[in-house]
Length: 245
Image 1 (spheres, rainbow, N blue to C red):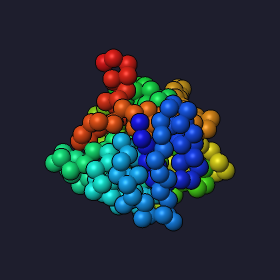
Image 2 (image 1 turned 135 degrees about the vertical axis):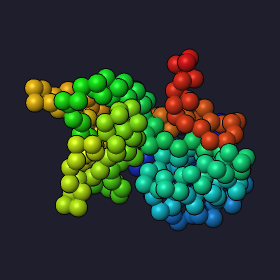
Image 3 (image 1 turned 180 degrees about the vertical axis):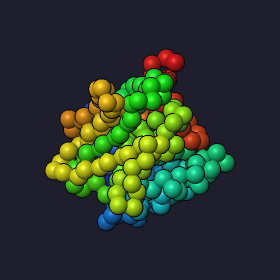
């Protein structure tokens, strides 16, 4: 399969290596200094593009992929206020996209556990949840896209948590809101921790990435799965197909 890379930083290099190890061809590597390659024959001949860039550039990159007729696997977070418009283009037949806040297979298993646990804890109002995410200092957006997905799962699954908030002077804690904290330090690939606390005890679940390999592998697997499809797709669809659901 022919894969184009959009964003050629640390993640892009890891994705390239894993894609080639799995027998794929990397057709082009587009970064800030060679934007003209969006118009190249190599790019237009790609089966799929993998996009890991910045919140400011993701939407424009996706639109350029659509214009070239290239399906996109996007792992950039922090831009998703624009996602409904992009999704509408896909549903109108004008593009193909998979977007996920996190492509790690382990994280997606963790998300399934989070949703199941939230359903149980909704029956025990003495327990209150909080969520903390830790990432490397280069990550621009907060909370992380993965943290937002986890928080949204808790809000949708419980009847007593109405929303989530980043605590601060202008956003005091409320019992009906899920506090979502963030920390940026060192080169931490990603840690997400959810704690349900009561006066008697605490229940904690956590996922820690050891490196960026899991994210990259999941993105390449998503690209292999998306090739030949049309419209808007989710990683949950891919996971369901992989495990035979």
